[in-house]
Every structure is written in structure tokens, then in C-alpha cells.
Image (cartoon, rainbow over all chains, first blue to last red; front, side, top):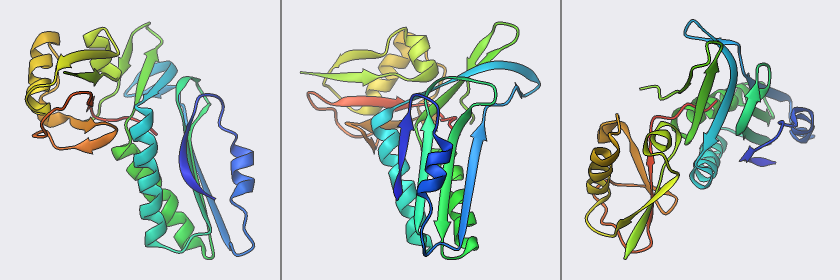
Length: 138
Length: 78
């Protein structure tokens, strides 16, 4: 199993984890990015994510292919949620399985870092004071 | 002979719309500068990437009839 996808509802983390299983896998690594209740000293009440879906999907799949070219993996997936999320919701899931643990750790780290850097998805934070803001880190 | 501009995130809020039509003239860079002046976008062009028809492209690319142009502000997924 391999690939990148956007989803609008809750990310099915348990099903994704099961799908990483492989008889040749000696290690499975999962990262879940979760909505937290503060950022830059402000109290966050909720988030929403917007994506340019066509380019996000192609760029996400390009990142998956890059990671697979670097190391021997048995599975590698990334699922990012879009729409409105609450505190504690999983915003992004990255999972890798590999014959050896090092490759699985490295692949997950590579994918989440590159997704955050390159994939056209944007986060809007809604704050306790009623304000809201799109995040565009420079 | 027109192109469609796609807006996302704060550019969408500032423009007050998801999409906009422009005549298919000049380059992607010229289109951004025109629209930046029209909508008072905060971003300099060098802070953005541009995609044409769903693929990242160069700013000097000439626009053609039917193109779909997306200006990509700094991303914040994950």
C-alpha cells in the first residue's frame, strides 16, 4: 500500500495502521499530527484546512515516491484531513512499514517534513477571542 | 480567450471570491501583478509559487486560452 490522499471526515487511523502490515515488515512507524489548543501564545478553539486538491494530491504522491526511492519500504501512506477540525482531531496521518525500523522512521520523518513544506494545504486558526487567521509561515 | 485564476486561503479572503477570469494575455507574473494591484494582496510575487493546469510552473510562462492559474501562498498543512 502506498499513496497520499485528502479526506473530508475523520481519518480512520486504525484501518490505516492495519493496512501497513506486511509479512516482510520488521518495523511499523506511525505519526499523527493532532490539533492542539494553543499556538504562538494564543488559545485556539478550532481549525480548518483548505487544499488545492489536484496539486496537493499530485505533490503528496510525489513525496511518497521520493521516500520510496530512498529506502526499502513495504508500505507508506499519508492522509491529510481538510475542512473543520476540533481540538484533539487527527489532522494528518503518516505511516510506514519496512523490513528494518530505520527506514520506516526515516520515511515518516521525510514525508511529514516535506508535506508541511511543499503541499498546498492551508490552516486557519480560530481563536478564543473570536479572531481567526490563515497561517502563511515564511 | 480567457484564463481562470484560483484563489486559496488568505488570497481568497482578500479577493472575496474563489475564482476570477482574466484575458489570456502576458505571463503568470504579469497576471499576479495586475491582480495584486486590483485586490491589494499583501504577498510579493517572490513569496508565492504558481501552478498552471494543476502543475507547478514558472512565472514567465505565457498564458493560453483556458489555462487554470493558481497562486500558491506559503503553505501550512500538517
